[in-house]
Image 1 (tube, protein in one colour):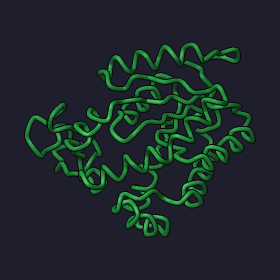
Image 2 (cartoon, rainbow, N blue to C red; image 1 turned 60 degrees about the horizontal axis):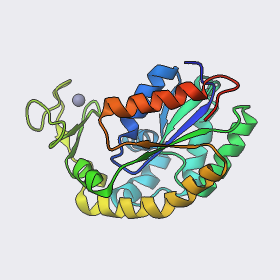
Image 3 (cartoon, rainbow, N blue to C red; image 1 turned 90 degrees about the vertical axis):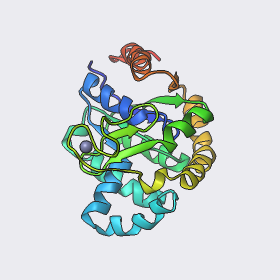
Image 4 (tube, rainbow, N blue to C red; image 1 turned 135 degrees about the vertical axis):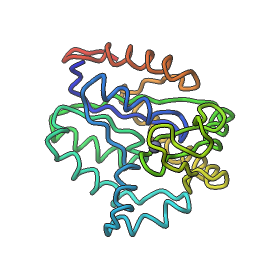
Length: 226
Ligand SMILES: [Zn+2]
């Protein structure tokens, strides 16, 4: 697929947009960008940014716009982003979205295509409370829906599975409330711009992927339609 577009995937934690953006990145040949991965990388390497954001993430708080935007701007200036990219979970706020639109215009990428992954709150809680992350390769399991073959051990690399601090139930609740509050204006904004498409993310990975690919196919090319 030759999309030549900035794709933005939005959806609450646990909506599966990480999985879908990796699949779509492969399908479209675009880099998959996640500010979460960028931040975790900064924390792991102990950079100045990492030291600033570590305590915020541990408390389930969102990282301030100025820190996120400078990290994003630097990433988008790299050559692999010249023909578009897939953003997973960014932007999260209206100011971020407006600044990103400015960056896209400056890069000649035009309007983004925004996919909103919607899931019911019940399904989200089940998905999140069971989520386990591999401490070696970052693979994600779910103790209810997608358990590893051996409890607590990654199938692929034998890494220990851990519950990330921001997946603890009390932190999850704060994240969902923060998500709702911050993201509603964002999806409203993109809807008004005519670039928002909604996908039912409560279905299986394959079903969601098929629905997503149908939207991407329609959007393909200079005369692509939403
Ligand atoms: Zn692993």
